[in-house]
Image (tube, rainbow, N blue to C red; front, side):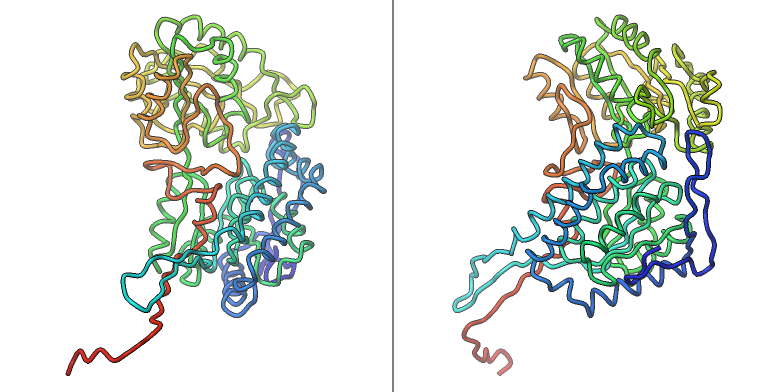
Amino acid sequence: MYINGEWVEAVSKNTRDIISPFDQEIVAITAEGDERDSKQAIEAARKAFDQGEWPVTPANERGEVVYRIAHLIRKYKEELAKLETLDTGKTLEESRADMNDIANVFLYFAGIADKDGGSIISSPLPDSESKVVKEPVGVCGQISPWNYPLLQASWKIAPALAAGNTIVVKPSEITPLTTVKIFELMEQAGVPKGVVNLVLGPGYNVGSELSKNTDVDLISFTGGIKTGKKIMQAASTNVKKIALELGGKNPNIVFADADFETAVDQAMNAVFFHAGQVCSAGARLLVEESIHDSFVDELVKRAKNIKLGNGFDEDTQSGPLISAEHRAKVEEYVETGKQEGAELILGGKRPDQEELQNGFFYLPTIFTHCRSDMKIVQEEVFGPVLTIEKFSTKEEAVERANSTIYGLAGAVWSTDIGKAEWAASKLRMGTVWINDFHPYFAQAPWGGYKQSGLGRELGHAGLEEYQETKHIFRNRNPEPIHWFE
């Protein structure tokens, strides 16, 4: 772990074996911290914020440090990508794309670090001036998930540093390798002692301490909704700022006038990319009834051909699920879907190939005849499982799409742009794609409506999450007011 500018063992001396989800081989051994390590990291971050130079370093100089981190990510792109594939099982091609995106996130926040120096506002009082300034929040606890370990961490680290905060980062205990590496790169880039701190270990003690510790001013979490609710409760100890991204059950609406070939291709990508382990996965497909049967037939035909395998093999199209526990959860949802009356028309089991038996693989799975009230339609499965619903009107499509507790993302497919724009305006989601699925970039905000979370990451809004707004008023000609005479 990395605390107060030093690489350290856990206080307990405990370690964790990191295993490959492809074959369960041990690929690394890391420290396994607990609340004592969290407290040490928080103390270091607190001291660095309250007594150190980083919060008052000119914004352009902070931006230069963040800029150096971006270029080091590009320099070590291949090593980082291999570590990510080793850790998560995703394809090496996807991991390389992730590293490009991560470098772009650091470049973006490096570029805007000094672009908002505050503003002068008109004061209604004579001989006075009034200005609004942005200041760093303070000590920020950052908890990132296992599906995109470094990508999700970068969405938190880059804006926090650009804004002048100090941080304590806790990656998922099962996929920490690229986060460890980026701390090496941040040290190389010249981030001052105590500004960035890394604690490894499980959420129930390391993450819990970050959430409840009163020396932490902000907690940012990406992960499951149950954990998110616990973090909200723990954060009430000192009413710390909260930023949460808690997943989604994302609808993909296909109207009959959509470009059929493209919509089918993108529906595949929406749900089966990274074995469906994506918070914005289009796991809920809604198809207009006149094209429903032909659309489903084509989906099944293509999904049968998805090549499962080792993420380091060039012909692999999808890797394993992250763990045995997670696969068991996906299997439980599939059984629930059957019991609820959904029709399983593809997959629903583990693959038979001998070379895949040691990994946590699960076949691409498709259900039809789904109702909006089914558990498998309402809840986030986080696996390669697609539910398909049929609709007849645009109003019905939108009503069904909005019928979950989530509101992260969704898509609309139609060549009638007026209809597509109408549907997009009605969807209660933080991101809506028209005739596309999955694109995101550093300049655009990301986050959800309803129980998909609080706040936004990326874009200028992502920087503002790590800033406080202060109003400074100055009386240029103070005089006694004689109020109590």
